[in-house]
Image (cartoon, helix red, strand yellow):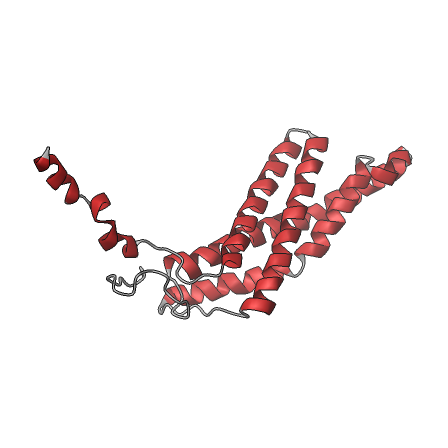
Length: 201
């Protein structure tokens, strides 16, 4: 038994103090940062689920899922604005090399398209709800519902891919900035005496 314990002590899992700092952990990230990433991830899952539902002609379940996605995205926007205006305006990507250009290209496209998401998502939701007769639209004639359906399809042609792209790239930016290549501006939360390993790339 002692020999077994000695062997186990030599395994990486028994020497966590040495290899734990080598993991791509988010160092110094504010809790809201991780919440934002979780909300973006959830929105992505809901959007894909909504697409799956409508591809199978399940309009009512599709509508409920998309309302959930809209609610999650609204929560994200609230948390995002709170973080950037009340906690920290920006965190720079400090890793050198070509990956820095890739990061800022992704970030730029993410930010520019994100501006349009609230307007497109709300418009698509309203037209879709009217098309299936939710709320006040329940008493609408079929012709008026058909008009809303046509408008809904026209809007979602742009709204869905943009919304999905923004949600996915939000998670990508988070992973690049806080996990894969953590910014030098972040305050390390790990033991300062632990061995430091440079980010990959």
